[in-house]
Structure formats: structure tokens, C-alpha cells
Image 1 (tube, rainbow, N blue to C red):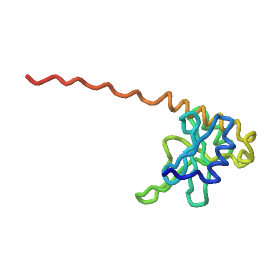
Image 2: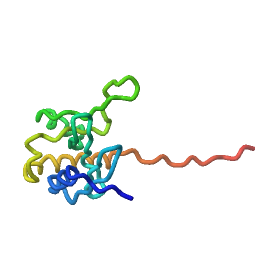
Image 3: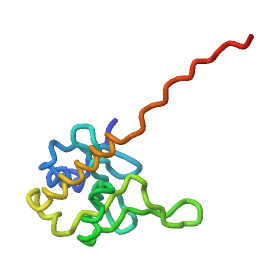
Image 4: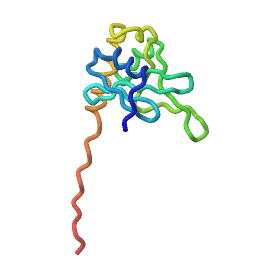
Length: 134
């Protein structure tokens, strides 16, 4: 049986609605937020309560950093060293959490980053045809 999204996950979907209809699914103890099948954000509790983390790309990372957004990292199970996800997620700007209007530009950047990630994934390798031994 699927777990109903938390109130915070539902609120995050509401403020991300300018990127398109948003759905929340359980993911690694948190939530994955998707639009058109693309994960544009995650919700994770890294010890200080649930927080919204938006997808970033190499092309827009500087905008997240300029806004003072924190990069998503977690403590590794091996020694507790901080690990940064290769998928690039940044915390939502505090003032953007107030309304869909305030979040609109950030939601569109997250959607664009998800589209870039989808379009740059490596193509699957073609099967190598085995030649029978003589």
C-alpha cells in the first residue's frame, strides 16, 4: 500500500506547480517530486527537519550558489564523510518557499535541469554479438 504524501510534500508540490502538475512518491526515506515523469526535487530530512531540495545542472548551478542555497550532501556510511549527490540538488531559497509565485523561476530551473539530465544520459550499450568458437 502506497504511503500518502506528507503535508510538507503536498505543500511543496503546490509551490512547484508552475513547472507542471507535481506528484510526490516515497524515495529513500524522503520524497521524490516529479513533473511529467521527471524528478525536479526531493524532500529529505538530514537531521534538522524536512527540507526541499531542487534539481540543478552545471548550466544553472551558479544561480543556486549566488542565492546562498546549500548543496545537498549527506554523511556516508563509511566514516561519516560528507557526500555530494552527483545529481546536483540545492536547497530552495527561503523566500521562494512562501508561494507558487515566489517559487516559479526556481521551479522552472529545476525542470530545465531535469530535462538536461534526461537528454544527456548515456545511450544504452548495444549488445555484442558473440561469435561461436571454431
